[in-house]
Image 1 (cartoon, each protein chain N blue to C red):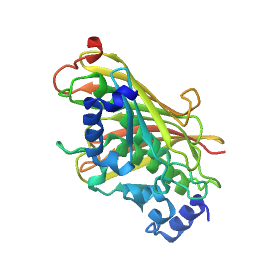
Image 2: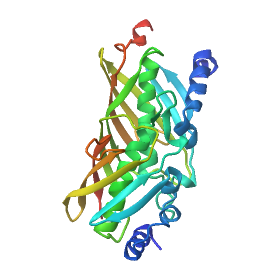
Image 3: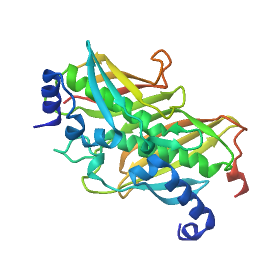
Length: 143
Length: 153
C-alpha cells in the first residue's frame, strides 16, 4: 500500500501507531501522530540524537524544519486524502526560540488548497502553544 | 581541498561535527571547510526515506542537511567563540535525489554584518549547477558581534 493509502487507513482506524513503520523517516526522527478534533498533531519525541548543541542543550535547527515539514505532509495526507504523495516545492522557516531538550509538537493548516498546489502554514511549539519555537510556510505540489 | 584535508583545523572541525548528535545520527561527513565555503556529504540511508515505494530521501532529511551546511558556513567564516542562532531558512526543492546516491552540499556565508550572517547553499549529486535543492538562510550572532575571518585571507 502507498504511504498516502496507509495514512488514510490509519486515520479511518483512528490509530496512527504504525506511522513509523509506514514512514521510515518518522521512525528516524521519533515522530508520532494523533488526531484531536479536525487537527492532526505531530509529536517529535525527544532523544539525544536530535540535539544540535550539547552545551545549551538545544535541538538541531534541522530537526525543527523537518518536523514542520512532516506535520504539513501528514495534515495533507489526512485532510485532503490525495491519491499520490504530495511533493514539497518550498519551505520557509522562521525560528523564534531555541528548541529545548524535550518533546516538540507541530500542526499545520492549509491556507489554500488548489488543484495543483497546496499552501500550508505550520507551527511548532514545546511547553506553551502560544509561544511557538518556529513557524513555516510550506508549499506542496499535488499532481 | 587536498591541503585542507590534512590541516589541523580541518581535523578539529571534522571532530567537532561528529560530536553534534543529530549530525552523527544523519551520518553527515565533512568534505571541505574554508571561510569561502563548506562542503558536506549526506550518505544515502533507507531510514531517511519518507516513502519506501519510491525510496527517495525525505525532504526533511534534505532540509536538516542544508540547515546544517548553512550553519557550518557561518562557523567557517567566523571565530570559534561566535555564537549564532538561525533566524530563517528557505529551501526550494528542484528535483528528487537519485535513489541510493549520496547527496553533497555546498554553502557559503556571502555577507556578514556585526549581527547577521547571510548564507546560500545547495544540495546536489555531482554538479552544483544541477541542484536537488537550494537554501537561503540568515543567522544572528547572539553573543559578541561576528568576527569575519575572511578578512585575514
